[in-house]
Image 1 (cartoon, rainbow, N blue to C red):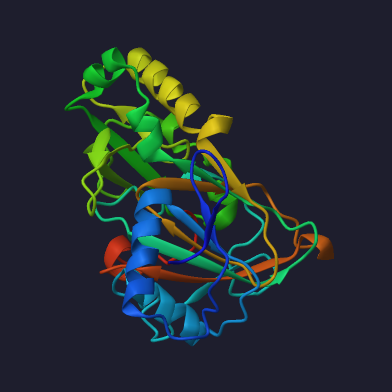
Image 2: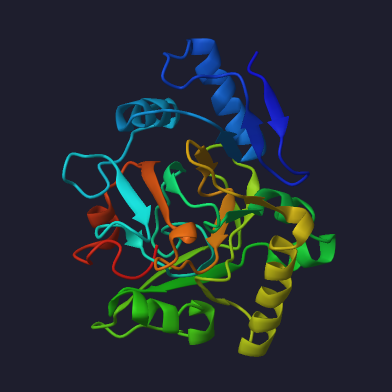
Length: 293
């Protein structure tokens, strides 16, 4: 059995006995899939892995995406590299691609270059928050639909000024809109496990259909408070050699603003994700990484 250490009461487990440069047995692979379903976030410290190793490990969980359709099957989230995604931008809580119909199920980041003051990544457990809803509130949300919105125009500056998409209050989008929108159940069944999860977010939720605007805003505020409560989150402080793998549907993630001008805050993470679709297939002709993610 794989040796695992809990990282918080809410979610997260550290795997302490695997060298991911080595092939994993069928039993080890099955155990990692089970642990991801149970704990949503897995951390592997002190790994010296290549991009090929990372791709091989992510293949345990499904089809590895050729995210940018250039054959590399990886990107970089970096405030140092010129081709790094998201730069110094603060990212409030969200699931990647929540504003389209399909969400890549599993995402990973590997710490290539991490300064001693590099910003952390926080995770919130959407399934746990859903399970702990009071019965009356849960009944109120049954069958209701949430509208998710994201902006894709103007680059990071525009995204930063428009970071809280739920404030838009958009009931409909004009044909030439720079926004992407999707609709999902508020209590969304996990596509793999069937476990219900709370599918609203600080970054992308505009409103819940079926309520007056004021009531929708009140409900969203209450749900976000439950999602991001200290006892429903885990914050990962990065080190070089960390590999973090998470369930992109069962959790949300966030990070503070970074400062690329401060060497201690440099942070370059290699990203590999599991997805049946490329970013271009998900976003159309929008330039990937230009604004939201």
